[in-house]
Image 1 (cartoon, rainbow, N blue to C red):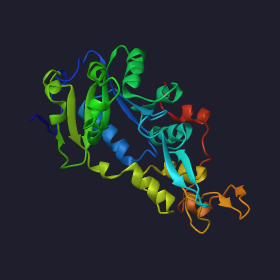
Image 2: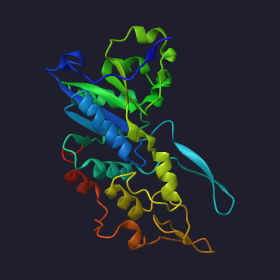
Image 3: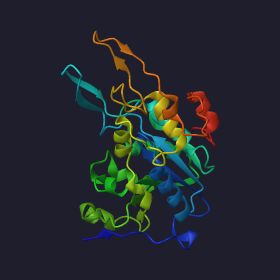
Length: 287
């Protein structure tokens, strides 16, 4: 069976894409929250494939993660969003990427109506960057289900795919069958990124339990999570990212984050940015 092995560093720029054109990485994801593994992966791919830019694209309505059912404190089943609001995820991504001049953030998926599909993202970015070759960066495990993606047949015509994985992870390509043989030799790559041991799920769980997420996510994102009280279940006795308090009569009162939770000694916590602030913080602005 065919198998995709980790790709060696690109020695000749002529071997991947057409060097007369710009090379633009596209890193899509829910980014809930964005963490250092995402940033290291994007930076590694940018270096390996000599990319001119990496565009981070927070998902608008991820069709795989529309809602979850949770029990309320009173024992009632409640359907809640499975991901944080798009604006929160967009702003965290802007904060995390602002310091790298090669990184930018796009609102293309957030502003598109309906569910988010990768093929729509790539179609839109192809129109916006007609002079560029696109490199779609995703987790290697996600590629295992690529044949279930919406209009997957068109994906490889729109971009080259780079799967990033933990060291030792092997991506079997048997599920691609004869489709792999029909693709160009540089259509699909796999590279190892040690920092991918970090996961957004673990970051959410830690924040929800009041445990630290310093050094797992960028400092500014830690502070944003704290100020916006993201991921936190109501636990008034816990420190960290605070949740709302609930009176016995059911009234909900916004919680105030403890100043010692949002900063470390010597830190100065910035005010929570607005969407307008985000455009200024992003080195290239949103698309």
